[in-house]
Length: 382
Image (cartoon, rainbow, N blue to C red; front, side):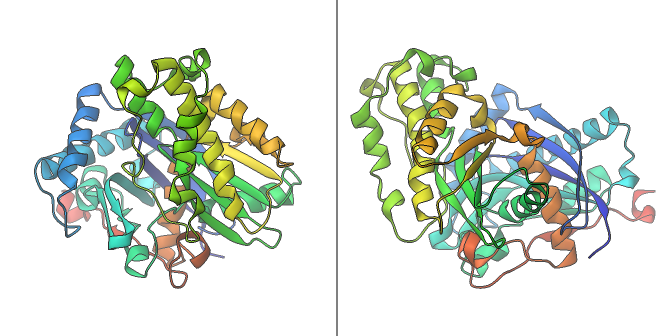
């Protein structure tokens, strides 16, 4: 068992809505003492710049390239993360000197694992300089280099949480953590702590793109738009019959792998309702590739706040003999879990412990990863 340290995790996900920050005390193994967390929302102008960055990123061939707006965008993104860290520390009366490491995810702008290519914007050296804290970043690259999909990385943290919940009798194995972010992913924890994980399909990204295009708002808050619509079965099945769901090999997804419907395909309400159903049904359909039928689904990520998605997920899981619980029902934080995971993974990286496994990303063997950016020495910062 390693030394327990204090880590901060930073996550800016595929929904591109802002930065989640969370603090952990952990040894990177079995000790997980969760601290405060916070979210810092991007303004609409910066979100628009991030979307432009996705277009610029399509021309990347080597992951170090930063064509078009990407170099400037990476610089500003990193400074915004530094501001988030400083604001978080100030709000919680925490000295930067008391934090051992920051786990910095950055912003994914391109993810093509079949081409051994994944690009997360984020300058670890600049963040270490700005915050005065060591930074572990670029945590997906080593997995890709060893034949993995580069995602999902959160399962190692899910396993630590599941171990504690099982020990306390709060969940029954096999259990599945479901993260409904822009893309949804599953982490299966079996009877003997077996871990299997993979992306399960579109999460919020299709709904977000649909309502932004047709209503000019970034997301369907509380599922209010979807609640006024009806499921268009033919449209739903056009998504659920995608080869992704039936393929023997699980692969990770980019937000561009599934596109929203054309404008004339549905009304605003019916489109949102149908896509909410697709989000829930994709989870259950992808769960058919798990080693055993889950007893419990633990739901985290922004999608758990959409009651329409959750109702469909409850109904579909119940038909399979499983129960669905939101993370908060188990005293977990469904908003900050990914940020917590990045703090946990940063500590594992510093200890040389595996971040990914053959059962989680398809990597050839368990591998560690991440690059370490050292904080400036006192002489440098004087």
